[in-house]
Amino acid sequence: MNVKTRVRLGAAVGAAALGLGIMAPVASADPATPTDYRVLAGAGSDTTQDVVNGLGESIDGGTLIASYDATGSSTVKTRAANCALTRPNGSSAGINALNSSIDAATGCLDFARSSRGPAAAGTDLTWIPFAQDRVTVAVRGDSPLNANLNLTTAQLKSIYECTLTSLNGVPLTPLLPQAGSGTLTFFLGEIGNPVVGACVGTMQEHNGVQLDTAGDIAPYSVSQYNAQVSGAVNDRHGATVLGKVNGGAFSRDVYNVVPTAKLNDATIDATFTGSDSKVCAETDVIEFYGFTTIANCGATVLKGER
Image (cartoon, rainbow, N blue to C red; front, side):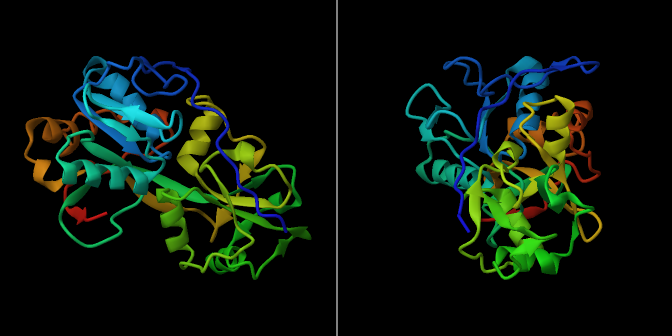
């Protein structure tokens, strides 16, 4: 079986958010000009890039939050001087870049977008939830795999260990998101942390265009899928449809990660913390991008190192 390595095909394309008075992010939703640095800079998760871009355009007239896409140019510049960074592609990459900014005391990043919780114990960083997502698996709608697809976690573990190699008579090509993806970490944890086999290929997360053969199967954010299909963001679901896992999908909170030492900073506090924060108040924006609002929006109890 050939192992496929894919790259993301294209960035977000603008679309009007009718009835909400906001605009969906436009193609490469980094701030529009190189000098549009704004007050807070963040990067990381592909899953939440579009919703945080939308929040950035909606809050304080687009002057507060600069959110840099997971893909695009090789570097991003987040401050006027000495802040050209390798673009973080995924939650783990964003968190690592935030830690590097803290360690070097550069202030180049103020937060990281993350679709996973902490990966190591500690108190240096705080994961602040703002919405809920679900994760399931995607296959092509024109594939025999699509026949009422409902897999168990045990089946998925076997698929990604390359011991279950076909379904419905179709040889499988399991795919996982790129290294640094929070969805990668979350999904593997939910299916029992398989020892990933040599049959598994790589794709840019939530890009259904890259499922291009009948046996392709990959984890997919339900929120991203719904936003793509509805036209809230660039429709890159391609020919994919969503299946079920154990009759449903895995639920997860999504986060903005900040240095714990900055929780008392007036701007960080007003933007992210508490149910009355500027982010948590934007329920229409959060729901427009396919996510579900949560009662614990803005909580600051979840801490870790990376």
